[in-house]
Length: 524
Image (cartoon, rainbow, N blue to C red):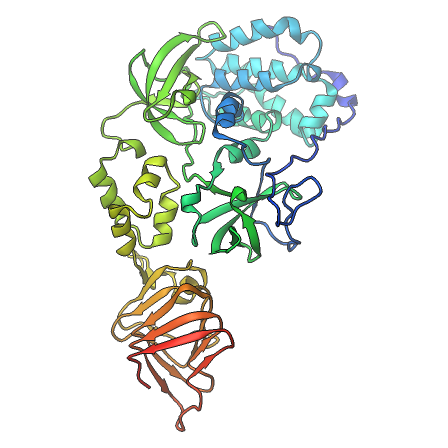
């Protein structure tokens, strides 16, 4: 390889290069009757300046086929996984020719071959990476690093490794430096990864309580939320995590996030990846960051001498998802028969696992993990209906290890989706700090023996459809009413209402205009 020298003096005289603006990316088309811009894309209502719970990203994927076509390009954005030669070659491929000196064109192919040949030497790899950094133009250095000093420090550490001044037997320091160069040189991966992890919500799952994401083109951002109502005009009301609400979101704008978050494996120095042959079973990291059972359909030589690519066919997936994966990419590992994968669980085992989920909201979220879970949890099927019927959220939720309350009654009632089934543990005494306990949506709340609301008022909202139900709760009130029904239809069954004042309170229950309340076997 060539002799390592210090950074080019010309780099210190560079002028910062301006990033080229890609322009706004149009979001999904809004149907008639929804708020839209002139180009038809949805517009987000005005938001608070302090909102932080957003994820930047491009417009939603138009189709699953388009995702498959973008898979190879998206994988190149993943950082931190694979062998060191694989990562160095990705860094070089990501640099435009205008960002390197003209002489690099003649050196490029030889440099790439030397990187593959130096797989077992941290010293040689450090020298090759330093050589690549030396080839950057002054404008590229100014654009990729926040300051010249940051670049000089990085290059200096690489130079120390390459010259033997610093020992790095297991390449730990080199990995850290490679990750720093990846952060500077590779394009931001979050947007593309986010795009690949969001799929359109199936119509059958568009129900109250569904966890969704909505894309707003004016901000070019995704926002997480929960469907709180299904409207008569076939739109949906979505309550976002930050408290904002949109009452007219069409089905085409509702997306769900897959829950897998796999990462490529980091291979050791000189590790070429798992030894797999044609026909072998393997576990592969799918483009949606899920580790899936797969089979090697073919093996071929990679684009660089000494590299290998494997044609991966995912079990249970259509042939359009087949892809060539480099052996040293960190996305492959040997198949272990004892490793449970989502697609390999027998029906009886899967149903047993799903039966342990606490509430219907958890079951809905589980259905977003993979297609096999979604098919088993579809409403109208006997096993799925049995799971939903037995899914109760017992409150308060207590950590079994330290006895800490993970989810209190007030928090659960404020966030529970309509139709959720909540059970107050026996002997629970509720004493809200502001004497107000609020049911935000129509839920089924059952109190076991001895559960009571002490010296407070129960506020009931949103009893649309079948309405909400409060059963078996003992309520004592002091100055204000015991129960206030604000909206919808609610039923109090087997509840007892008593005043804790010496002279009993005049009003036990207040029903606002337009609301309704049914009393069944109540006392007070």
